[in-house]
Length: 115
Image: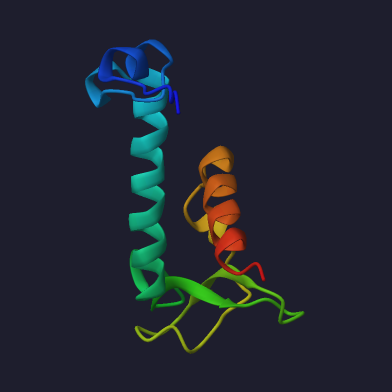
């Protein structure tokens, strides 16, 4: 039987292999963003101190179940274990959030909790 094999030169020609050194800046930037988001989500899972105070209470950020129980949302807490939620402070305003960045974070979190 006559089988066609792809050698390394053909693979490169057909672009089925990409050397990381040849990646363009947008791909590398996306990979860096993905890594930062993964790290940020990991930090949130552990209850992250913000360095911000409200009514003499230290504020922390973490995740909590959404009101409908179908996912999680980013929330603000007044204890180091992220068990005492406050609705008096909003996550995005607390961080003066970059909307695009937090949209990425939200998408990652939603993807993780899809069935």
